[in-house]
Amino acid sequence: MPERRRGVTRRMVIAGFFILIGMMLLATFVPQLSAESPLVTRLLFMVRQPPLPVPTAPALTLIALFYIIAGLVALVPRAQVAGTWLLWSSAALLFPAIMIGVAAGKQPTNAVTMISETLRLGTPIALGALAGIYAERCGVVNIAIEGMMLTGAGFGFATYVATGNIWLGVTAAVLLGGLIALLHGLLSISFKTDQIISGTVINILAIGMTGYLRRQYIVPHVNTLQASGHTQSLATMTEISIPGLSDIPILGPIFFVGKPIFFLMLVLVLVTHVVLSYTRWGLRTRAVGENPRAADTVGINVSRTRYVNIAISGMIAGLGGAWLSLEKVGGFDDGMTAGKGFIALAAMIFGKWTPFGSFGGAMLFGFSEALGIRFQILKVELFGGPVPIQFLQMLPYVLTIIVLAGLIGRSVGPAAAGKPYEK
Image (cartoon, rainbow, N blue to C red; front, side, top):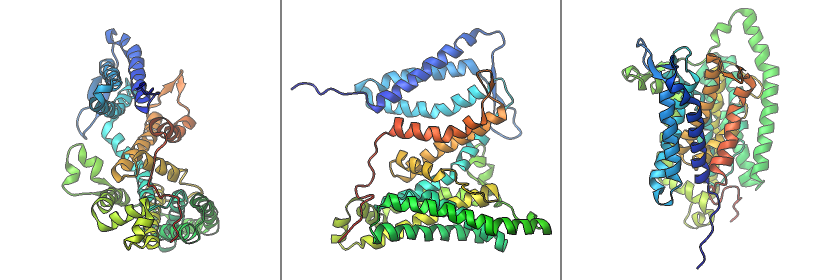
């Protein structure tokens, strides 16, 4: 039999990418190994401890050699397992490589703060990705996550302004997100509307609805509070330190110091994994998403399962919106989600519709946003001048394109996703 010809695979592209990065790093930093006054990167890991000096050129040279070796091993057909582990290790090394290169010769950079910012900035994206998982694993494509997040952000902050109780604001955000998700369910499940069109309509509806809410209610009430000197009562959610755990070196400030919605996000990732993988409801959800007719024949109510999951999806997306207006900013602006719902969908696809994988994808986008902030603080220069802020703001969206087109490509979700079910 003639041998089957294989084209360029995604694995080859990724391996070639790391080989190219490794060669570029070698070309840049090998000549600096013999410099009389070598660059040093100073990284902070613990409070009240001196920064750790890292010789920039030797460190990046070692990382470059690792990239080249990992890429070459990954190209060997008989070294699939070893190549996969080396490629994942290379991806993990991107964080220290960027930190060491960017902070070279500048003020001490707190690596723990950078990781902490990554987790917190990735929180709404992770919540949006979890919302997408609940919807799509039961067979409903939910591109309305953006609108659900925006609705939660707007109505949550409006409730906070009206009542002065920030937890009532969070509750309103969750409930309104679930309510608009039920509208998506009504259109796509009961009326059999195309789910992409239904989601798009909800996104447009959310923009108009929250814009009207801001102009007619939020802005006048905030102005009234300013005139009466009561704006001090409007604030973001209070930071929490978990006793004992927050004192753990390095890990404590990263995972155990934060605001409530951040902790809820971490809990929801674990809960979603357990629910989908180890409970009867999760089994029914996955069955409805893969083969609703077979699920119906064994007594599973397909419509009810989809309605409940889409409502859960909307409530989680609303919680993501509450993070924006009540935990991060303490205010509401038109379109403040800025595409995070769509980036959340990319994180979900990146994670293969799994909670932990989607969390990893969300943190990748969170890192790109945190990196942009760090570039501004360190005044990183490019081609003889500071990096334009517009370029830094583009990073998460450019990364979305690279991840979807370059690293993931065509990805197959649940078999029945986007297909209305009729008995």
